[in-house]
Every structure is written in structure tokens, then in C-alpha cells.
Image 1 (cartoon, rainbow, N blue to C red):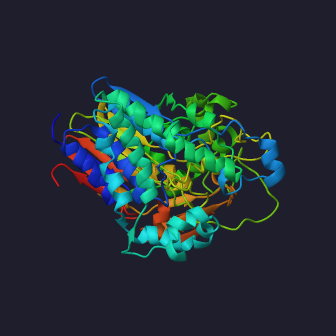
Image 2: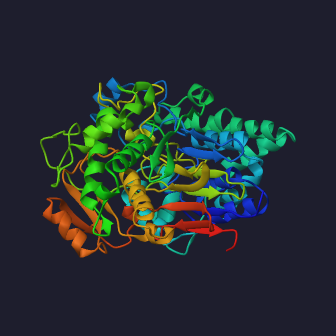
Image 3: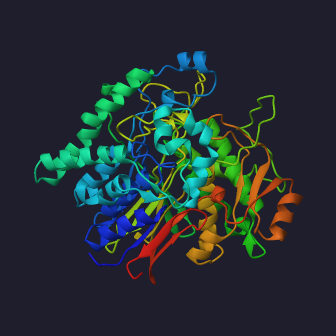
Length: 551
């Protein structure tokens, strides 16, 4: 393997972890898992070590693209009728929205199948950051402070995130010694299994899903009236899922499937590609009206059709078939459609506008051999109870299910919530080209589509494409409880050129400005390999950093 590589992650310590692994001879998967595990420690407001971790990878030796869903299903005790009776239409915050934690299994599956290193090798930075602490940075401090009342609801969560009853301050050191214990249990189990790498990884996984960590999780859920059982944890398996490859401007973009909103990313790209560059671009800039209307159609179809593929009413391929794409393009006019069918749902009362979701992070890695790793780990800590003695806020991703009997995304035993995290990777002429992803909830695919258009249609450098001002539509039911919708609403960063703002206003969009370079517009992490070499860019909108071997 050559020493050339590119890394972009959501936090400097995660980037450092990936750099160390790559410099030591590890591959993109080793580095990506090290970074992803570290993100669960140093971004504990946005990412959980016991959360979700969808992964998409390219193997340069086989030329194959693989994705792991990295999301657990609902516990077997989940009952939508009981949830609706007790809590109404929305899954409540707290322990009842817990689904089976997938991230540890997802990381270890990737290491076992495509990596070269042991768990202890890749966990060094994560354990150190948990045991010795990390310096509180502005986004983390602001996030916890703005949700102080939510963190204070649960004693075990407040004990970590509100030490002495106060949010952590910028510059302080934030400790998570219980989380260090959890990771050390996995390392110790690996060591006890002997020198065989795969046996050691299996033992590390078992420590979490059937060993001392599982015991603490299960006991706490039993004590607090949760649904998760030992059988749920012991029976969990990450699923390898087919990717959805889309030809887009000469590149082959691989998206994840309908178990997340990856199929919506694929549909958006398919619509823009089929319409041609002349539709997405006008007078030397992006035709944002067209892009927004495409996204509104995509989100309408997401609401109508997209759920765990085991429960979808139509095959996911239907949403990217040329005839269907053509029919959706025919619905786009010169003026804004506030709520395109079939997503037209009227609750009968106005909704309070919410600015979006901050949870999630990302890691993109390309190594010198051309292997690609792209993962979007997630799950917040403010909306659930930390399991005492473990430091774990176990996956609260049930927030993206519905407690409405008969709803497409109604919770059910074993059923996966429809994830917002959806990493992508791209090839050109069959060769590795790009890894990309972003936090941002429903803004994720919107941010990535705009970045791709700036690179492939507008000819911007990667750095300029990531930095370019963004827009986001909210004309659809949101993915997170309470699933608000805001017909015709478009947010735009305040440094968007005035002529583009004026054009959107003239076409009937309900516009509101964000601050320039705001975290609400995403936090893209992008690694690229082309004829000029390696490039890595992390969005300055958030706390991410990027590095290449030459840095």
C-alpha cells in the first residue's frame, strides 16, 4: 500500500485517529472505524458509541461496493398499539424509543471483513478521550447549553452532561470514565481470546452484546420499564445491503438503500441527471428553484413509499426507474409547489418552525490502494437515559418511527426505523473517486446534492463546492418526532447571492435566512482521489477537520 491517503471527519481527534492508523499501515477501513469510534466519544451530543453506524465501502482489490445498514430494529416487546394508546402519535423521548444498538456490531463487522487491525489498535484514541477527557469546543458547549432542560430530565444523563448541574463550558475538559470502562471491557475480551484477530474481534463484540456491557444495559431497561432484553441484544446482526448505483454526470454514485434515506438521495440524483445540466444550471449558477422542486418531489415520495425494505409497499428500484423519474420531472413547474403529491398531508393546525436536527457526524477515508470508507454514525444523548456505569446513551433512533398503527413507518418488532444518515461513495471509470457524507437530518441529501452539482456542473474546486452557500426545503413531514412539516418553506444561508434569493422569491418560495456558514446547513466531510492526487475537505460549518498524507 502506498502512503497516500485522504481523511475528513467531524472532529480533530477523530481525524488524528485515522491519520495514526493510516501512517501505521492500516487501510481505509481500519482508519474509518478508528475515527468513527472516536466520534462517539468526542461528539457525545451527536453520536453514540451505542448508536447507529451505516457504512458504505469500496474494495479496490475486488472492485466491489458493500454497505452495512448499521441500524438496529425495534425490540421484540415493541407494540405500536400500546405505544399509541399510552403516548399518542409520536414515540416519546426517553427509554421507550430505544432500538437495538448497532454501531459496535457495524464497526466490528467492517473490521472483520475488510480491515487488518485489532479492536485494541483502533480504540486507542477513543479510550484516551473518554478516560482522560477532551477539550470542550464551541459547538458541543452550545448544543448542551441550548438543551439543558432536556438533559436535566434524566438523572443518569444529567450526571454526565450537566456536571454540578451546569453545561460544560468551552475550554473545559469533559470526562466520560464510564464510557472508557465500556470500551476497555471490549479490549479486555479481545485480549483474552488470544492472538487470532477474527476471534478477538468476535470476543470484543460479544462483550458488548452478551457480556458485562449487555448485562448492565438489560438490567437498566428492566428497572426503568424499557423494552430492550438480553435476547434482543444477543440476536442482533448487522445486515449487508445492496447499494443503489446512479450514473450522474459521468460518475457512478453509490447510495444506500431504503433502510435509510439513501434511496431518496439516489432518486434526487436520477431526476437531476435525467433532466440534464440545462435544468439544474442557469446563467452560470445553480438553478436553485429546480433543485428545490426536485427535492420536494423526492421527500413527498419518501413519505409515501420509503421504509424498512422488508416492509415497503413497492420495490425501492421503482423510485429510480426512468419512467417514474420522467413522471416526477413532469410535475415540476416554474413556480413553487408548496407540498407536492403524494406528500400532501394536512394536520389542520399550524406547526412551529424548527430549525433542524444537529445530531450525527461523518467520516470519509480513501487510502493509497484506493479503498474507500464512508460512514455516518449518529444518535444523540439529550433524548434518552444514559445506562449507569456504561456511559452509553443506547440508540434512541426510534424517534424516526411512528406510533400510529397502520402508518408506513409504524414501529414493529424487528423493524428498522428509516434512518436519515446515508453515506455515499463514488467511482469514475470504475476507479475510486470520492467518499462523502454529512450530518443534518433532513438536510443531509440536500447538502450533498448541492455539493455534487457545484463540483460536476459548476466546476468548483472541492473546497469551494463545500463552502458554497446552501438552501434547504422543509416542505415535507420531518424525519424526527414530532415530524413537523412546513409547506413552501425554504431556508437559505445569508451569503447566497441576492439575485438567486430574488429569483426564488419571485417563484413563490417562502424564504427565511440562516446565518452564513451555519451548522444548520450540514457539515460535509469529503475525501477525493483523482489524477492530481488526494484531496480532503471538512465543512467549516461544524467542528470537522481534514488531512492528507502530505499535510
